[in-house]
Image (cartoon, rainbow over all chains, first blue to last red; front, top):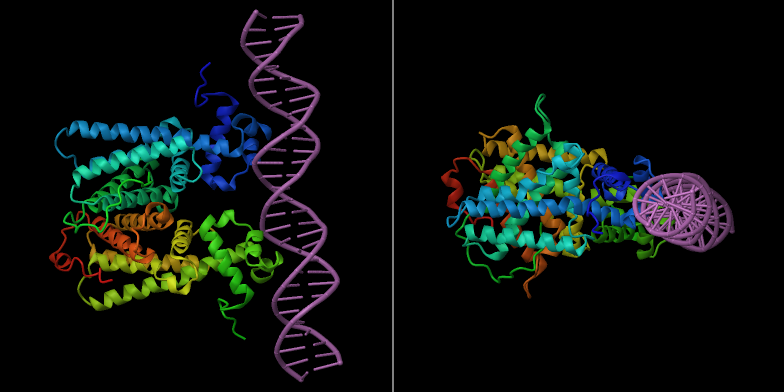
Length: 231
Length: 231
DNA sequence: GCCAATGTCAAACGTACGATTCAAATGATC
DNA sequence: GATCATTTGAATCGTACGTTTGACATTGGC
């Protein structure tokens, strides 16, 4: 039979959910299999049985979030380009297509917003370190797609300039997610989601201004295209 | 009588240097006491003898870099404000005062540039997590100082806006340092330091555009756009 | 020469980890 | 209801960790 990629119920799903929560709270390296199985009221052996190893569990936790995020990024970018067919879309829309999917997984997860942001931050902060190659490929493909999209809007920028500016945007997003709860002082009465919405708007405007800066930049020494890993 | 804060020679210094290198390469949590003492050709007990504990060693490694960086940041900011006494300095200069000290410690360290960048990235990525309170205070003071400086140049921005934009700049810097060696493909013949110089210039311009977004950018900023690229 | 103080060393301590084992339990299929 | 693969449970494995110990070596001041 065909195996469902992500279990929708049962103890395996429960392990994933619990692990996810603990990872978000304390970081991947600070959580042991005993912590997870204990919190999930399962046996110590459960993780190794269901996921082969601790690393297998981590990989599945990561993939479960990363894959939909990347797919939504690409879908949103397609939508933006289709809507502006022919014309050049505004930078803000491309950036939003790139960043908003990182916030859009809330409904599919049982995590509270705060924990979810931290988890996504952790995942992306160490993306590329020990990921399944399939995921690496998806990340690289997504990144390349966005680089091309930005290149069309900013045709005078070199490939290097483009890559670095995208990298800076990613850094801002990751840093924001990772430290969100220590920076954000919630005004009473507003939900975390709507506060994050405001913050995302800030980041999008900030990034759009940075991406579009100058535009009359001198030619670069050497163009080193592609072979560039980002997320 | 008065103890020297950082040993200039001897096995204690050697332990610090070796630990620093290993931490930069693999991250703080992935390096054991045994790894360090083995690489330093010292005994396992040496770290606990000299630094009290593994955490004590980490703290000293961090402080040794963090303190000079923060001090240089403040000194540079003072210099900028003094030079523009009365007038409002360009954003680029404040940002450079904030970011360049992260690259300026090369001469005081035996680390290769690549490792040093990774170490600084790691340090700042988890700044505030388990640091001595004296260092936390220094970081907070530095941050506050820069927030005020930016506030003077961007008087129409709210405190929240200001804080977030600074946060985005930090994120870009941290992300750049952490992933520098996996992103940068060095053109043959150019040193890592000069390549980093170019990248820092990119980040400064990107950040200045982002910081000033939405403001009626005055003419004084336009009059010397390349003034800080005098390397 | 002596004696603290200081530093080094091999060895071991207790703990926690990821992984494994194997028997019992469970559940689906016939 | 018997059969057999799947899933659990408790106990345990070997390893690696940070730390401690106590004996030994080195040093500098008197």
